Each structure stands twice: as structure tokens, then as C-alpha cells.
Image (cartoon, rainbow, N blue to C red):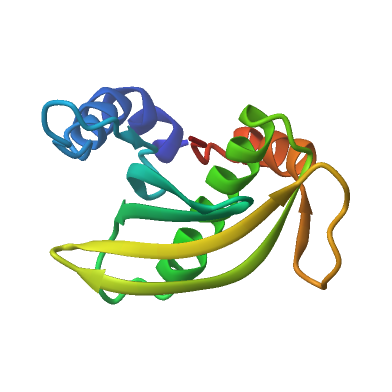
Length: 142
């Protein structure tokens, strides 16, 4: 009973304290933050050649966060899926992703091919399915 009595008085302080955790992303930088998850710092997209696209993503998390590399990889996948849909394609194929902790942020450098038909290979994604999943899980896309 004592725990239940404390919750109403603790809740406003907890919510106020957590809202202060939102990062300052700076002017002109779109930043999406989830209080319980990483702060997504943005995506840069570069068309390399034809259907080959490079995605640079950044995410705020602690340098020792073991989940961060996987989250950065997933962030790049979400960006690739949305990019494919924007360009009128339904699929993408993952070629490579490198992840590093640089300048106080986790950064990913990923390359995908985009296509209208399911590409050959093992690391293919259905763009609509991935974008939907990203939105459900609070991961921003392009």
C-alpha cells in the first residue's frame, strides 16, 4: 500500500526529470528522441550510382551501450526502406554497414541497392514492411 501511495507524488517529478533528457540537436537538425531509447540525430542520403545508395545515420547513446551498434544498423535500414518507397521502389538489398562511436555519437555508414522487384541475395528487405515496423517501434525514417 505504501508504494501505491507514493506513485502519484513521484510521477510528476519523474516525468519532469525525464523530459530534461531530450538532447539539444541544434538548429536545422531534425532530432527524434524517445525517453526510454536512443536519440536519433538524422540521416544523410547520397545516391552513389543508379540504384546504389549510401546512408549516413547518427544516434546519441553512451559509448559503452552494447545495443547501440544494432540500433544504428536498424536506423539505417529504416532510412533505406523509406528512401526506396520515396523513389517508387518496393525493395532494397543490404550491401554493408559500418558502425563507429565518433564525436560523442554512434554513426553508421550503410550502403543499399534499391529495386522495384525482389533483388537476389540474402539480405533483402520489403520496404513497406520495414517502414511499418520502424514506425511501430519509434525509429524514424528519411
